[in-house]
Image (cartoon, rainbow, N blue to C red; front, side, top):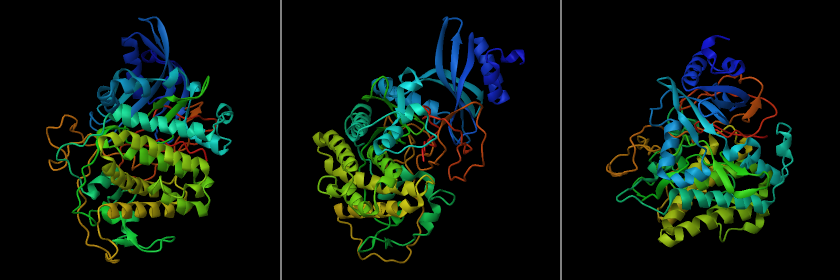
Length: 507
């Protein structure tokens, strides 16, 4: 091994790109540090390895286990990469970040103008102390897969524990992270702009929802299981339907990609649902729509558990999602009804004191519609479930229209005249003056489009003996980096996200 790599052990140096290894080794030697590989963490859709390393600091005379990650970006600016967003999240809500977000240590180590090495502390100090919420979901449902590590299969989870974990996360994201309900003065979005804050560029010609949108050009949709045509959510997203309606959105600090693979719960030495960690802040937004995170988390759980929802239960499920209080909860699996009502309880208890509950309710329906569309573009969604998500999107759009007394039952069924897409409110982006006042302190000038909509399912992030080998990436409308599928056995939930691409699919 060349002397220039003396800051790294040979196994770690071999697993990194030579230039990355050289830059890291020089930086480590300069600071009197040495890095030894503990294990590789394969994150499914990135050719860049993520590793657990042991840092030896000769100046401090101490060793620390850390997660090493190489961040690369094709289009990100310095202000929009994961490291910068995480720092912004720490600045915006320091107490919440200290308790529930992973912690970067050291400054990012520049490798090139578009590439950085970062280090993060391990959540709860050891991988074995936490599991992703997906593992608890599958334990609750009695689902297992041979690719799961033995220690994950040994876990048990009661429905009330899983619900309490989700409620704890939603309560924390709203009450502790976002703070109090807030609407920026004079801030108005059209429904299309609200959809764009969830979908971003996915309706563009090479976006994941482009074909779906082209195949549904009319104002109304006729769908199996529905007695009458429904307003087309794609027409709303394109700015062709309800375009004159304006919404004053509730915005604030938001994760941007909240789901069960981005939330870790302490399970050892015992389960503590209040001790949770949110990872992958690559889509963090200082002024994001606050209804997005709870809606996406709930639909992600449903997407992962649809095999446990029988066909006769799927129509009642839509009814309960749209109305958790009076919907037919008795027709659903008990755990699912309890979960939906539990999350609803947390959101309403947060919003009620402000008197903004009606605004929250209508915006929640729009978030349900927009997030449901996201699952149409994900290959992790089972093909047989995609019609259900389209139904939900249309039903939620109809609910929003009813709440705003917007006529739609007499709309034409022929294609509408296409209109240019509205400016999408990007995470932490500078919005046009009619959307956000230019002097608002929380509107940073960034241009990164959210990759939650771009979320491509990967193989499980897993422990491997060697760095990942990769297959060809899927095409994407937002190619911030190349994405690769890696299949390595004996894995566990990774604790570092990948710009919104992370997905632990245990099936």
